[in-house]
Length: 212
Image (tube, rainbow, N blue to C red; front, side, top):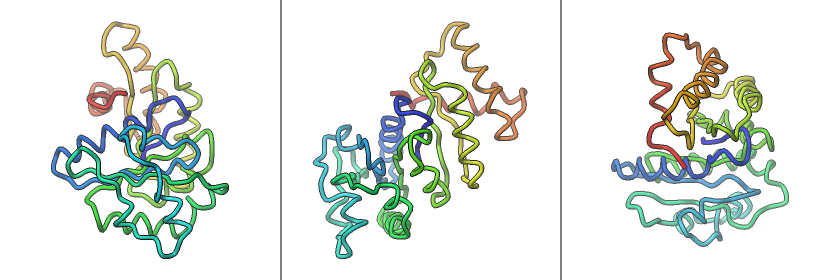
């Protein structure tokens, strides 16, 4: 699951980029657009937004095979949202949503779920316990540190498996960038049991190749 603290952090673009990279690595990948308020995956991949997730959760005779839309990228398909429902949180938190995710996993190797921002609605927190892991997207100069910390805390409280934080759209040059990034790292690093000695290791690599 890919989410972010706030709406302008670039989560949908990172989710799409991640799907493309994995598909190019010969994995069969499905991207599920679960943002039933402001969907964006159909725009990124230039797909029609009909017969999508909402239809799958509402209609008992829904055919998943006919709704996974192929993209121009080999091995990559997208399940768009379809029509936006009046009760998105109820649908996302339903048992049928869990069944749909399981069905997608039978069709593909990897399922990437694009969800709304954590600070905006409750959908992603509810869904976070039903997936293998959560990636949180932050954007320097846009994402507030307090919002990031609150997002991490909300996910931790429900027992979500937080895989890491992706620093999106960051320029890796100059002291200003370095100071900004270190400030982020030392503030949230304790959530993963990290120490200051780890600051030049894996967390730095998370920002490479996934920018919007």
